[in-house]
Image (tube, rainbow, N blue to C red):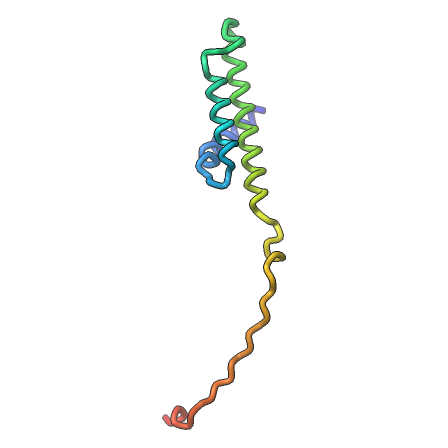
Length: 105
């Protein structure tokens, strides 16, 4: 989980700035992070567990946000985008009438 968190943390800010990531996902992540960091904590009385559970929950939240944001971005990209485009017929070269005065040097 530590390696996944190392890869996820640098991607959080760019994904928050990306307009293609749904607003509800950004708001839910931010509100959850504030709740985790807030002093209202069940395990805050236990000296070591109070810090470790916050760190573990923030790491889990970071990984989940990146995973859901990547899924929403991939949903917007169609892998076979070229198949959705209707083929255009090839244009014929237009016949041009050349006037005799255009041939003089």
